[in-house]
Length: 169
Image (cartoon, rainbow, N blue to C red):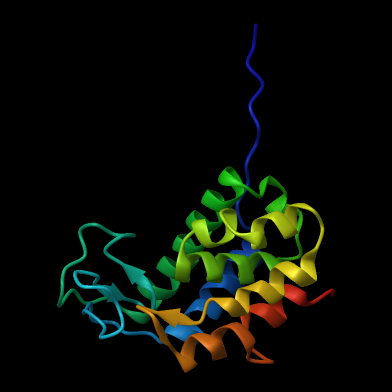
């Protein structure tokens, strides 16, 4: 007897590209890997958001080009989105590209657990998009400290994850 497999799709091509742009807009484009002061000890970041959790081989001082970083951010966004789709939102690929990109950016920033293990995932699964997108704004602290940059990332009218998540068109 054949076992039915659930087909899981991450981001559309458009959403992967948008996620890469959205992530790099907020994270910047640091081309040299380094420890950032707001990251936990031992975390190394490059390309505006890729860490040694994403690339275990990453070492302080590694250098990448802007093109390599942009491609990597799209790929990492796709992987995080695929993890979210597998874990809790199999319907992710049916969302509009801007909502997919918002969810991918949020997951890259905080991990799939902040979607799948919170009201965000439950609300999205149950069709409560506004509540899910609004809940993103609760996650604006790092190491117990409010970060204006995270608040901006969640709420900015043009580039914020929440507004992108809420868009209907």
